[in-house]
Image 1 (spheres, rainbow, N blue to C red):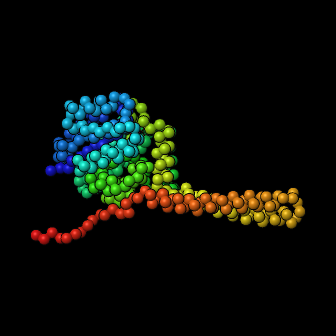
Image 2: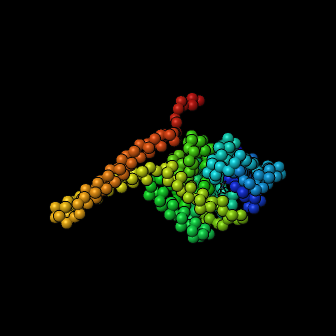
Image 3: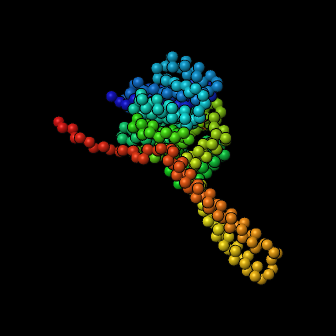
Length: 319
Ligand code: UDP
Ligand code: MG
């Protein structure tokens, strides 16, 4: 018996693209279960993220007429990451593996098959990697790539050019459920699970219908969340800046004292300039040190799991 797959699709005001999405994803399911790669009772789970258009009405209709369509409605708009997590937490209960994908069909559904193949070979997580972003606008492409670089400079472990198109085994979803973060950035969390992973590369297409639900404001919020949820490096930069100012202060002190003893300064200039630099440096350093503790508190309150068990060899089976 093959394993049951749930394709998890967050939807926010997606009425234009939904008919195409339902058709495409259902035909993927039929094809895979026809090949015997997934169980025939696999399903697509749509998560309506508090849409204000007819998304939910459409989903109810599809659910009535099509056994492959499951739908879950959130009480309000909670954002892409939370909507996706809610879908994965439902999928975890009913399916052996999930594939998460956006509703707009920008990600190539034909690679789902090779994701499933890798799962069958033992991978717990399979990342969909965008081979090229020719179809994305220049703006989207350059901001996204700049963001990935910034993240890795900040020491956050991320998969380059991977968005939220990925396969996860039930075990991976269960490990993910041990995290209780409210500032959710799934792309940063999944690599922390440390399970066996695979990759498939694909070409990212254009949105099939409707408009992007990620305006600049949401993109910036996601980016900021990605950095501040995973890195306390920005705080450390404050400490470094404080130390730098103190070094400059020392150089300024030498210069100011020479000028003072040569008598070519106004009265009061030396003490004013020195105290400005010195106090500035001390203040920055103090903020940085306080920040280090806040960083520690921040990491503590997240209560992230400290480990994920890979194998447990317990009592041997006595036959
Ligand atoms: N989405 C969501 N809630 C939101 C915003 C977006 O569930 O508040 C969903 C949206 O319906 C889509 C996915 O997140 O399935 C990605 O959005 P979109 O394709 O508009 O982003 P882009 O590809 O432009 O970055
Ligand atoms: Mg999209």
